[in-house]
Length: 173
Image 1 (cartoon, rainbow, N blue to C red):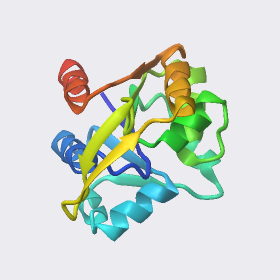
Image 2 (cartoon, rainbow, N blue to C red; image 1 turned 90 degrees about the vertical axis):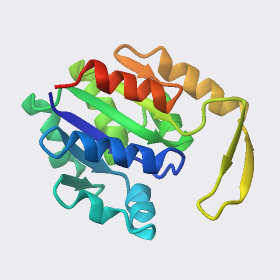
Image 3 (spheres, rainbow, N blue to C red; image 1 turned 45 degrees about the vertical axis):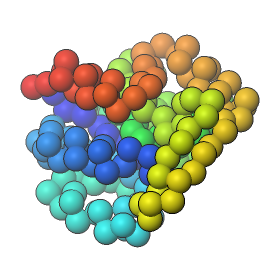
């Protein structure tokens, strides 16, 4: 089982997701980074944790990276954590980044896609790395986009980190 794991600029669940990826190991996961994901991982000095993995970055020539889906090497796609911006693009068929291109092509190839949105409840309380508490109130448009992608064939939207862990246990090699 090989996973194409897409990371976006979402910070919620980021450390836990990185731990999951590292536990699966480079033989089971290739990593695809959005530009924002690379910025976040660089800022927090987390890229070093992926030194043994194949890491593909968002560039002008995404076509070469996305073409890897056509090789049959990936059994599933995971986008976690996923920003509301990326979900909005997915919901409206915009594929202008590495992650949204992978989403689009994986859907056309019928590769199962699992998405863990960073924002999926009406009200989200969280603490930043610095320890400051925040409250986010989801906008109606964000909830509509999330609902829309839930209806896409082959797409499963996850609502918790625990749900993602359960999926990984189910497909464990």
